[in-house]
Image 1 (cartoon, rainbow, N blue to C red):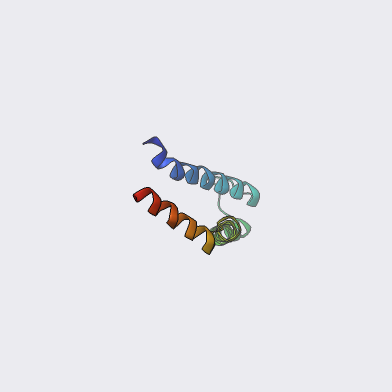
Image 2 (cartoon, rainbow, N blue to C red; image 1 turned 120 degrees about the vertical axis):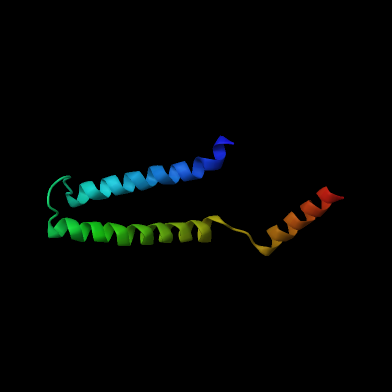
Amino acid sequence: MALQTFAIKVGVLIRSGVITFGLIAIGFVANTAPTPKVVEGISAITSFTPAIACIISAGIFFFGYSLDDERVLRMEEEISARKA
């Protein structure tokens, strides 16, 4: 049961790291007035981070998820053999 939320916890961990490192990279300082560079950096983080994550996810699915017709047929045969 503990593994049901594992993916969510990993996502929160990655999100926290990306936000922290992004804010450090743009020079964010808490409790100070944000400079135009910081505002621009926060805008870039909120725009480019999801785009980069989408590109990485698409690459993983495209190159890592190889499900061709032969494999589907073998899987269907295995399933029907288990049912019989």
